[in-house]
Length: 467
Image (cartoon, rainbow, N blue to C red; front, side, top):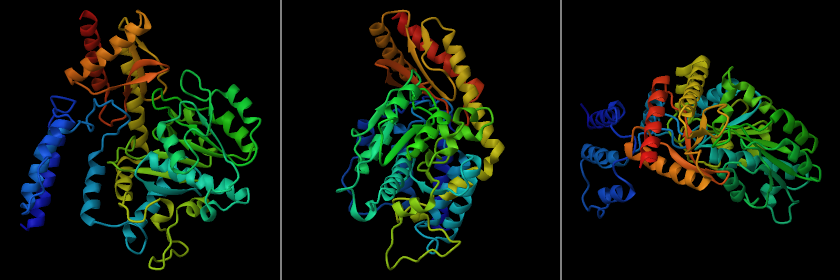
C-alpha cells in the first residue's frame, strides 16, 4: 500500500471512529484553555511522520470537540454533517480543486451549475435566479445585499461599483428589530452601517409588526433595501411576506430574505405555508450546513437578477479565462476567487436525499421539536415561550415565581444540563429575560431522542428546584 493510501485510510479510520462512538458526554471534556495546553508547543525544527501527525491531531482535538453531529445537540442552529456530505467533502479535499472558474475546475463548475438548478427547484424560487456557493448565511447575506446596494443605486443613476459610496444617494434600509446579528454585520461590511437603519417593531415571535411597518414605510423615498426574515433565530417566526413584499414593491424597494434555516420550509408540504410569498423577493440567503446537513462551510446566496449579482461579485483579470455563453464561472457569484469546491457536497446531499428525503428530514425535525415542547410543558414551572411553528423552542423555568428568580433558576438549569451532558443546549436573552434555546435540526433527532432530551431537561430543572 502506498504512503498516501495508508495515510488516507488512517484518517478515514479516525473519522469513522469519532462518528461511531456513542458519546458518553454531549459537551467537550476540554475547554479552550485545556485544548490550547494540549497543542501549545514550539514549532518543531524537524518534521514528523505523516500518519503520526494525523493521529496526534485526532488525539489532541477530540477531547475539545462538541458532538455537533449527534442527535441531541440543540445549541445554535447546526446541522448534523451527514456522512454522505462528509464523504463528498473528503473527496473535495483530496481532489484539491480551486473552484474559481470553469477552465481551472470544469467538474466543480459543472456540479455547481446543476446543484444551483436543483436548489432553486426544491426551494421553489424563480428558475432564472443565480446562486453563489459561499461559506454560510453570513456571507450569503453580504453577497445578496451587495447586489441590492449596487442595483438600487444604479436605478438612482449612481454606479457604486465604480464610484463607491462617497456622494452616493442615501439608501434607506428597513429591517426587523429581531433580525439576526449577522445581517447587521453584512450591512456594516458594505458601508451601510449596522446602526444607520430603520429598525421596525416586532411581535412576540420576532416577526415584523405589519401595522407598524405600514407607518414606517409611508415616508420612504429613493433607494431602499428591505430585509425580511424566514425563521427567527430564537422563535422560528416568519415575517408576513404576503403583506410586506407587495407594499415594498410599490416603493421600488429591493427585498432580501434572511432565510438561513427557515427558507427550507419551502421544501416541505407541511410547513411551506409559513414561507408563503417568499418567492416574490429579490434575493435570499440560506445555509446548506443546516437542514441540508452538508459539512461546514456551505451556504447559498441566491439573487433573482443574475446581472445584478454578477455586477456586484465578478472579479476580472487578464490572466483569468472568460466565460462564454452557456458556461458558468463560480467566482462571478461570490466574494472569493480562490475557493473550495462547495458544490460537490451539496450535489451529494441533494442526490442522496432527493426531494422526498429532504421533506421527510424537515418534517421529522419539526415533529421532534413539537414533541419536545409537549413533554416539557407538562412539567409545572416550565413554560414554552414561543409558538413552536418550526424547529425552534425557547423556554423558561420556574415561571410560577418572580421574573428575577425565574431568570436565576433558568441559568442554573442550563448549567445543570451541561453538567449532566446528556444533551447540549444554550441560553439566550429574549425580551429581556433568560431562556433556554433548543434548535432541532439534526437528521438523527427522532421522537425517541426528543423524549430522552425532554426527560433530561426536566430532571435537571427538578434537581435545581430542590437545591
